[in-house]
Length: 281
Figure 1 (cartoon, one colour):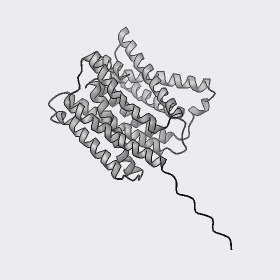
Figure 2 (spheres, rainbow, N blue to C red):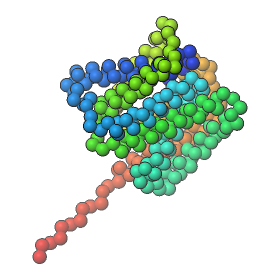
Figure 3 (tube, rainbow, N blue to C red):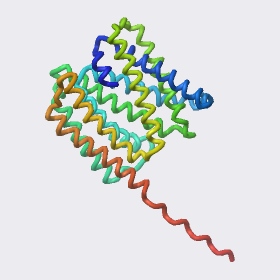
Figure 4 (spheres, helix red, strand yellow):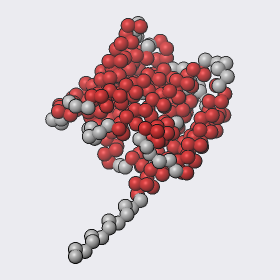
């Protein structure tokens, strides 16, 4: 998906691509709901929570698509790995979750990795500096969306959450038409539709994967994105990650894996035995 967006570059407004992505997503989700007799899942009484989660996710998507057109794919991917760090910090502030030494160690590693990756761009001497900050914004707002998702009460169905998210970013993207859209060429249309189809497919596959395997097994696989980003960036754009990415990205990945391992360990910890009933006298 990000490869299609990068191939489009600045020639096609990001909002135009995101609109098609949302339209395809809504149509496919509605079709799935109808085919499985689950149309009732498209109705919700939790609009406020959906709005908060969807708007923050929309900002994250706009930032991601914009960053992809500005800096190398590997750089965007490496910076996106900071999202678990932001989730941990936001969970401490807004959800009251405790952060112990393992997570503090993970945050420290990740923070050092971020400084190493961002260091060469902190002078703002090149245009890539803005792209790096936008990519960091994508990671931050993605973390905010996940926090709102945790705060949603009632355990909304994945189909419901995905539908309202898609509806939100499609409407927001449609508003960008006032800033001017272009008439794409045939090749550009193929890339726009390709980004939409691949985005929806990835979203659905990820949703179904959590049905068959625990999150602790699936989440680390997200880091294979780095390998794909390096390969695609080199093949299509002759992009070679800088030394700061090679050094900083493993530290950020290590921090994320420590956080995932800690969460898995806490979930596997046996519950304390229930107290024995007091004998009646």
